[in-house]
Image (cartoon, rainbow, N blue to C red; front, side, top):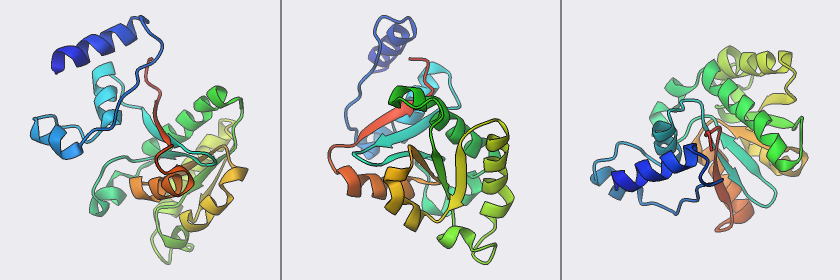
Length: 191
């Protein structure tokens, strides 16, 4: 209910507890109940007044952060922009301290097959993703890419975090790594 949600978030914001653990939800039931949020990440961000959170999934060997979360595939490219990429990179960098790395090694996936293949298969890497990576590097963040998603996850143990451009690009790798055991963490909440 709205009351419970408001109470829990207020208590978390007031530091009455250190963490909030959520259970799996049925996205259709949530929508049918009148909530216009596709998942926990977006709902918790809304309730806590944050617009710069990231969804992270941690498996055994794969820790992936999604640049975008729950969009239909046909809409993904329209949601990719420099701010979205930089938010994911900054949230990955800042999450490093929770995993014992002050300067975590971060890989960023491209959006397109073969990471666009130098513009032959799409130009989002050239126009948006690579410039965002360069900007983050200029801020001292240990980030690299854009890499083809179908190969970078084969080297997941070499990276502290891998940033995926969309849900299934990152989730498939995490579920192959730790199906039923992976944990969803919302980064950059105030609790």
